[in-house]
Image (cartoon, rainbow, N blue to C red; front, top):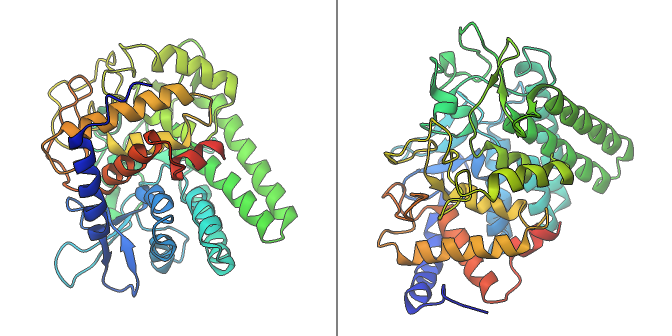
Length: 403
């Protein structure tokens, strides 16, 4: 088998990643235990990075557990978890409730961490916290009563600087910096397929947790609720002619942005295999869509909104390391083992050849990275995992693909 990814430079960068990753473990104010932060560009921990902890659990389960429990510590009385806990200045703390920014179900990754850590007490705390979080979405993010989770602001989906979530007057954060508040825009609220898929993934994980905790009736209730979410996604967000899931506004009009949000439906495993295959063949095997030379662009290459200036921190075009790390949750699960191997090789080569320090994103056409977020935790994690996988070792991603 050709090993064109295996170079002296790639091996040097592997050792560098091994040295640098532990430096992203910090103690944040008002929490007694160290947590895995997002890296030098983001001084804290973000809820949308919950998958990072699944990878780090193989290194230090206690840090991975703490990465969930810091959010439980700051859960609001109404059930809302903060989008982030960060340290903008030495000795201070900033806890963000102005948006949700959760797209891979944190209940799913907590369940995965719990299985590694083997802590029943953590499992019980996680079950209670994420059940309350689910209830918050039902109470506060289904204004249109369609059984969908609604997007109110740009930061809700973590798609910074994407036209999908900042066009037409959509604010960056929710009014009053509180995620319960919907902007005063006539066509709001917008049902979001990726946020709704997060609810589905959380409910299937809560079913697993309930089963492990000896609560079979609760487990069945969560599975029934998950299926309702799937049905609502198909009813409101699926465009059969395009073969794609779109945001839907209050008028029932689709907002047709072909963004990488579709991969989040795969990662939360809400899409059944036949429909997945249809989407995959049409959009992920086409070099004019998501099959870019350096995949996966955050907006399809043929989407008219694709930003070819490729500015920093752009989910309007750049291929993002977060998207690449999340591919571990779905590519092999849906039977794309060979494609995933090629995907890993592309990312390893691109990171190894970059003169920049494990930054966040790369141009999908050239593989050139921006200098956004040095020693970014997802880039470090994927590089270490992908190198080990390509060397034939069993890793976290190989187990995720089987589960």
